[in-house]
Length: 229
Length: 299
Image (cartoon, rainbow over all chains, first blue to last red; front, side):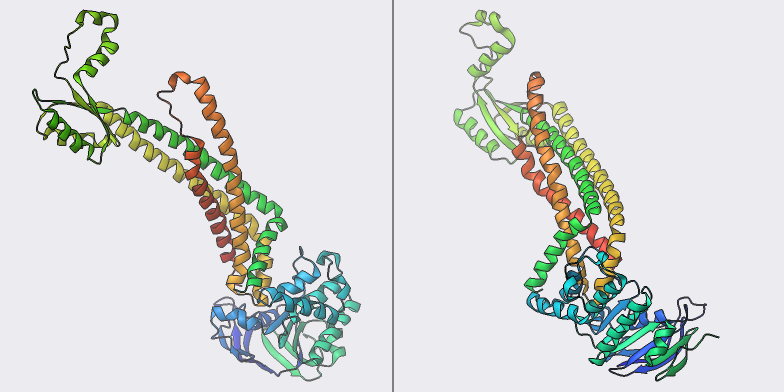
């Protein structure tokens, strides 16, 4: 599903690479944590998977798309395979919950009749069916992240990337979001979560890939968060 | 593009205007200011040009004939002159009409002494009016070759002054319009820069969700076009009312100059100004939005 072969990424010609000769493989239906401290290369990895960046060297294959060879005009089609949520939610603040989720379907030209079915179903999945008319600024952090999740999943992507999804949430909301991600994974979606929330990683007993200074230092099934030092 | 997508795109473009009220108002104000200045400038230039054209049509070339020429030959010469492209109209003035006009213009009550005589016998002529005074010399050169023509009266000085003034006016109007366009682009680019911050996040989200460039661009372009139409319509209405007031005021206050000051009707001016201003407004709105969105498409 996701394969990185000897991937390196440098932002400058002479500086330290953000990722250095990284190789990994994630199978369909897996739940994977990518952990590491700030500046370890986690966000670079997410940006590479979203094709916001291209690797300096190496090869990335996601759901049969070779990202190194992907033409610019094919990027939108590729991104429809990936749902993505961020620490800062990235919702459209001037639109309500329904419009935010429907927006993801509108931009890929899903017919209105279909959108009217899909959006309420997705809001039910994330536990916000009654909030569809609320403006996003009226919602709590946890609720905003649920809306972001609904938007990421409404197009049925086979892969969900979550970049620090609990970074702005309190422990209770963090756990609720993680439970939702687990439920989504149970339904067949491959879930990749970038985080440095030790408590959650250690409690969930999933595959943990630890990145340090751009290098994968460990990759364990049912792993734990490894300290930097 | 699917119909539902088109409707969504149009609605989004329309809603964007209200979502970003300050940016929309700034854009409308910028476009309106540019079009207002352009409208005023165009109206003034068109009327000056119109007055010059009117003055040009009063410049005549007078052609006198050889003594004893037959009426048939005069008719032939008249027909040949009328057939020329630079000629607007040809008027035959008989010797009696020439004398009557002379008496009125120069003799007044002293004309009684000439009763029964016509000192201008043999001075029947054609008064030729041109549709382009700059071609006067071309016509004169032709007339000099016509058999039966004795003398040609024309004023090179008047024709040259009018021609040169017309040319100068063209340069000045081109210069003013050029400056206005440059100022417009400067103002629009600044206004567009204001909107960039508002747009950046939304464009980024659309791209990450998998929207094509076309789908990302369309609502912004429609928004730009709508802002352009609104921005152009407001000054057009303002200039229309101002123009009508000014020509009525000028006709009342400067009646003595009515022979010199010739105003075009609002209908004549606006039949050109409306489409040109709308195209300018739409163009400014469209390209302003296009530049903004292009800057942020590479996500």
